[in-house]
Image (cartoon, rainbow, N blue to C red; front, side):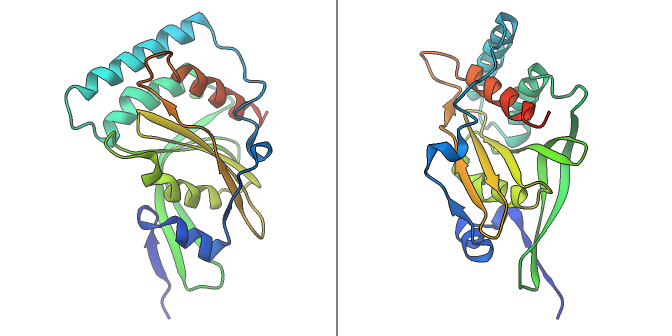
Length: 208
């Protein structure tokens, strides 16, 4: 029998639960990394993030805002500010991934929007969705990529440009995952991209 390929962008959370025994963890202690001991950011960081936010809000005035525009206007600048294009980090885009399904003739294929890593350690997988979509639309796809990562603990970021959420996945016989709060680019009280940058710096530093 020929193995059947499934597309990662068509996978549902129920598929991952049934096929990989994936479970969601509500305990805040499981994914405390995004909440505690966050590194400080500079005044220059804040100024640059304010420009990123202003640029995103301006783009919303001229829809539609597609996935590639989200990457160029929001994600790429944040990665630049976080210095994740510099050593010791490595950057790849549109990375092909294959995830075999246990005890099944099927496998899942897809392409990671953005992969940041050190040597063979995947530090951050970023899945971008167009602004009109909720980040929930890409959660199963992101978890699929994290399940394919080579290390035991994996972190990911999913964003629509207007919303950001971090994900932690722990491998094992019964993989477990948890999600951070959702950070909003449009928040009128403060620029929540500050916290996004802090968490990004924290999670990538954990591999050092």
